[in-house]
Image 1 (cartoon, rainbow, N blue to C red):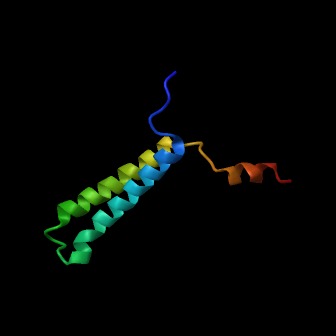
Image 2: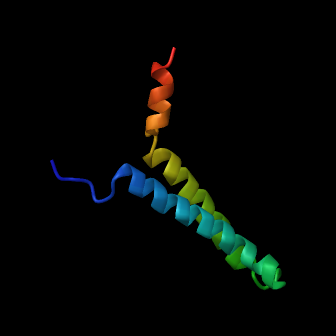
Length: 75
């Protein structure tokens, strides 16, 4: 079986960066004062944030940190 291109932690990090990039892209029209002309940019940013967030949840499902595993073994 071939090795995956991205490991789960790297995939989670890349999708988290894409999620925050979408949020920043969504906020750009508001921060620059061009709300009405930046509607498409805001929609694209919101879409990127939602898609990246859902992909992050779906692709890294069941992936937990060592801290979570340690909590299960502590009485």
